[in-house]
Length: 408
Image (cartoon, rainbow, N blue to C red; front, side, top):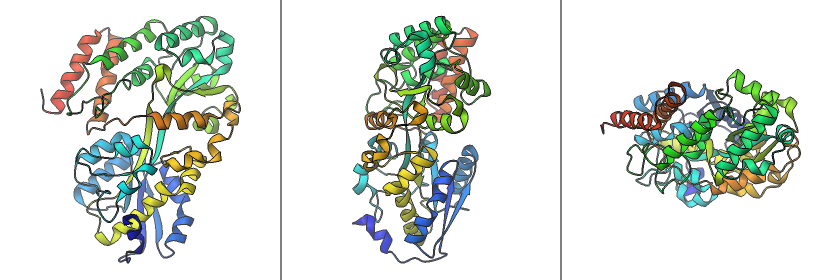
């Protein structure tokens, strides 16, 4: 087996391993130190941590200059397209790594996201973020609205929001943009990205974005959004005090609410699937190694990547400690997934999130995804706040992306 070959390769050079990461993957890497020492007794483990933006900037610089290269680097999915575009990352499908031999062990959509059009696999999935809707059941009860009505069609969702607003004064969602983010993920054609089609051309003038903008505008006109940005103080206080009835995010948000965002709201939340049968991912982390890493260091780096991504015990430990949902499918049969969650009123919510993880389809990543997201958000702002027509705003956004790609 190619996967086992690395473990038998003689080690040369300094007996250490440098892992570049960001919160909370840095905690996951450090927690693996005892297991790493058992695997390689003479190899020290050094974890270098920076905030997300600084980390990715430093990694891009390191890959471009081949200076200060770590052995293993973490990459958040939003940056993956940018990193995959160049030739700076090692192809893990090549010998002696042979990651395709264990493709079936990873969540399918995550593995596909790390695969370039030419077949190279530039990273190993470490954790994923299956989308979920978290609902304040105390607010829904006060409004006389069943949870199921928020998980039906978009029309059902909006109708439920109007009832909630009228009877309790609570908002349905933090921001109208949250609805847009979900709506544009529906009906993606195979090979398409979120903002670019399978050929790499901007795709903002199709049905997905027209429908998403329509829904966001309706949410705003009906007064159903609190007009707060995610992670702002107003957003956090709205979740704590029940002024916001639902929030759509990754499953990891339930853990954040329980541990530090809103621990006093224990028992008042329940999880559900996203509206209109949508399956969406929010975030996810990958591990990669630099292509220009010295050859004698690559086997050591690959061993650590395997430890974090293919070891069920490490995957489940990360899930338990920092709510990093496993990318390793074999963990999904563990009893941990069937355990009731006290913060969610004893609901077995991990079973819902497991279902979501297995239903999400891969969205092709693009080097300009981060820029495109900013452009689309700016276009929605123009529509909601400046009165610009949807058609004009989307055409402007399309043109900006075409200019960025040199296609205008």
